[in-house]
Length: 163
Image (tube, rainbow, N blue to C red; front, top):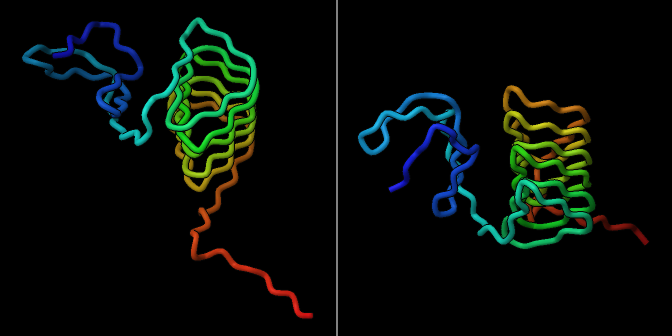
């Protein structure tokens, strides 16, 4: 049983599910509680690393699975996994990932092979590119957006030049 207090975090992790909270009242285990909305997403990747709120890191980050950043990161990020940028995060980096969920601040270009999700109060200062882009109301986005569908394995065309 999870006891819900007045100050609710922006994310609650329950067995590979991310629950995003927004303001509303609901019943939980027979008690009325006020939460801040509810949106549940299934995260396929297992969380491999967590950079906490008061942590600063500079360098190159590559990983498999999923990583959550709530602190400050400066450098380069490359992965075929999922990057979760928490509300208190400040990232100055060009990012190349499969899937990214942003609630904090990102300064740099983002390329995702799967999707980019930006939730309030997220901020992006840079260009983004992905086949699927989702930007919630209340987000700040300053940059260009490029969307194109992913190339399926069977759809790749080979150019043949005549001799």
